[in-house]
Image 1 (cartoon, one colour):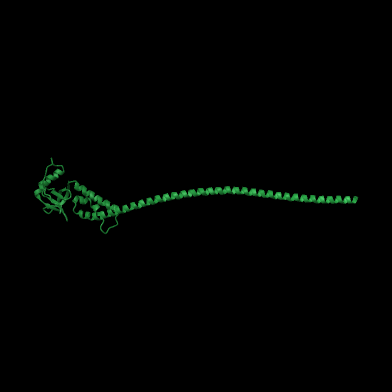
Image 2 (cartoon, helix red, strand yellow):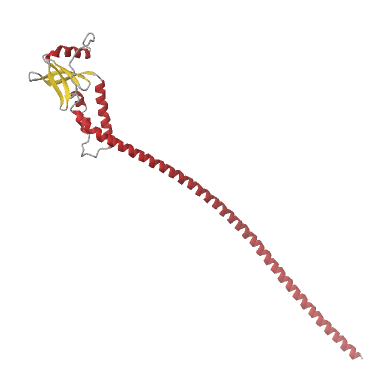
Length: 256
C-alpha cells in the first residue's frame, strides 16, 4: 500500500513538473513575441520619424522649386518685356535710319544739281568775289570724283551760296582792280559793283571809265568816257567822299 502511494506521488510530481516546464516554455514564447513586437514597433517608429524628416526635406525642396519657378516666370516676363522694348526700339531706329537714308538721298540729289551750276557760275562772279572763293570752288567735286563725303560737299556748297548771296545783298561795293584800258595798257581802276550783274569802273588816272556786264563768257567790259563823271560821283558817294548823296543816272545792261 505504501509503495502505491509513493508511486502515485512520483507520478504527480512528474506530471506537475512537465506542466510547469510547458508553462515556462509558453511564457518564453510570449516574451519573445512581445520583444519582437516591440522591435517592430520601434522600427516602425524610426521609419515614421525618418519619413517625417524626409517629408520636411521634400516640402522644403518643393517650396524651393516653387520659388525658383516663380523667379523663372518673372524673369521670362521681364525678358519678354525687355525683348518687346528692344524690338520697339529697333523698329524705331530702323524707321529713323530709313528717314536719314531718304534725307541723304535728297541731299545727294540736291548736290548733284547745284554743284555743276556753281561751277558754271564761277566765271560769272565779280572778280573780287571769285578770287575770295577760289579755294571753295576747288573743293567742288568733278563728275568722276565720288570720294568726297556728303557733309563736306554740303559745307562747301553752303559756304559758296552764303558768300554769293551776301555779296549780292550788299548792293554797292567798290573794289580796286587792274584792268585793260581803252588805250591797250593795263592800269589800276576802281570798280563799282551793283550786286552780281552790273559794274562800272574808273581808272586811277581819270582818263578812262566804262561798265561791265555778264554773259555766258563771263564779264565783258566796255569803255565809255561819256559816263566818267557819273561813275566818279557814284564811287565817291559809296566811299562816303561826297558831301551828300544824290541820284545819278548810269546805263544798266542786263545779264545775257
